[in-house]
Structures are given as structure tokens and as C-alpha cells.
Amino acid sequence: MRLYLPLLLLVPIVGPAVAGDAEVRSAISERLLLEEGLLDNRFAIVPHRPTYILPITYVDSPNEAPYEDGDIDLETLEVKYQISLKIPLVKGLLGGEERLYFGYTQLSLWQLYNRQTSASFRETVYEPELLLTFLHNCEVLGFRSRVLSIGVNHQSNGQSGRLSRSWNRLVAQLILERGDLYLSFRPWLRIPEGEKDSPEDPGGDDNPDIEDYMGNFELRAILRDGDVHWGLMLRNNLQEENRGALELNYSRPLGSQVRGYVQYFNGYGEGLIDYNDYSSRIGMGIMLTDWL
Image 1 (cartoon, rainbow, N blue to C red):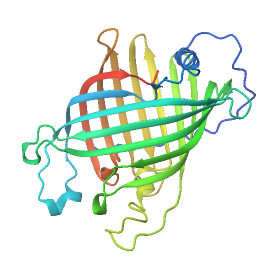
Image 2: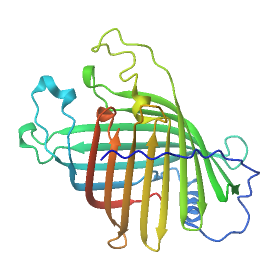
Image 3: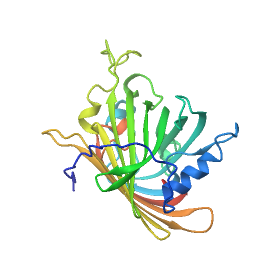
Image 4: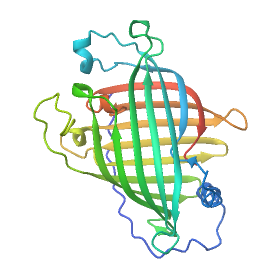
């Protein structure tokens, strides 16, 4: 079932930062304090987005279209994992409390159970980004706004020729909280590329219509219910020919170091090779680092 939900865009009215005010300790406060303690450590690497591995996932219709010439038969069982980290580069770049980070996220879809393809990696997406983060503490539409980031993002699958997919974006992110509910609104603006002379041309735009499927923003919500975390991700192109994606997340502790993790994805753009392919996937595994 294709599920696309209408979205209300958040238009923030941001007041002056009051990051030093006393406040009830929240998950965002705890994470910011942790990162603050690492800023002066030149060996510091801190979590960015979630890091997890789903050893068992089922995808209803693996995207075989890009591999038609290779006579490939994809399995519906795959391994999916993500590694994400960031490195603090500079604090007070503009003379205030802002922080400059280098972030890196890698997402892989692995045909581990497919002996026909020698258990090859079907897709690996590389996503480096440079982010300037501003800390603040102000009211926004009934929520408390805590973090605003702006930056440059590159996303590529590292392939060539007809399998190549990539794009560059200017990104922003606003993180808000209200009690145990946390919201992240992440819009982006694609940096234009020239047209390809042929599909095999190494230069030019690999996927000129990617915004028709991936849209121009991502909205996330996380609800913390004690040790249990519930998550929702929505993307939408807000066009007449409506396309987008939905992701549902559930995690809970399995000990002091890892969390049990269940993820459901429905829509377009789970990986870059699949940006224009609709699919549904459910998987379970473990999570090493969460959003909070």
C-alpha cells in the first residue's frame, strides 16, 4: 500500500538564543553536554545519525531495473546497515557558540544471502557533509527550538556509468523539543548540475529528476517513552504527482551498549540506486547509537 501523508511545513519564528538558561534536563541537553566535553579533544569522534545493523530485512520488490543488462536475480532478503559519525572542527567560528562539524554517513544494502551474486553489496551510499551548528533555546510554535544547522551535503553511490547516482545540496536543520517529543525539520536546496551528453558520460547530472521522488525536505519525529524510542520519518515532493517516503522506527535497550531495533520503510529513495523505485522493507537488528 502506498502511503503518502499531507505535511504541514514548519515555518520557525526564532527568537534570541538563551542557551545558558536553567532548564529541565532533556535528551537534547544531555547530548549537547556530551559533545561539549569532546570539542577540545582532537581525537574526538561523536555520533551523528543512528548507527545500526539489520541482519534480516525483507524487501517486497528489489529494484532489478538498473541491472537489466547483467541478468541479475536479486533476493528479497538483504542486510541493511548504517554507520554515521561526525568530527568537531572549530568552535566559535563566527565569534559565538556556533560549532563547525564534518559529518559522514554510509548506508549499505547487502545481498548477503544471494549466492548467485557472490553475496555482493547491491548499494552503498556515501554522504559526507560540512555543518555549521548554532545552539539556542527559544519558543517556536509551542516547541522549544534548540539547534539550527546549515551546511553543504554530498550524496553518491560511488558507481560509474549507468549505475551512477549522486547529488549536492545546501541543507538546513531545525531541532525542536516538547517534553518527550522531538522534531527535526530538514529542508534542502539542490545545487544544479549540467546535463550529460550520454548515459556513459562521467560528468553531468546522473539523476535530474531526483527531487520529483525525494522532495525538498525531511521531517522526523521521535517520542521517548522511558527507555523505548518511537520514530517517524516523512518525505514528500508536494507535487500533483505525489511521491515520498515513510519510515517507522522502534528501539529499546538490550543491555548497556546496544538497543534492539525494528525499522519499516515504505516509498521512494531508500538508497540512491532506488531513488525512483517504490518499495517496502521491514527489518530487525541492533542499534549502536540513536538520534537521542
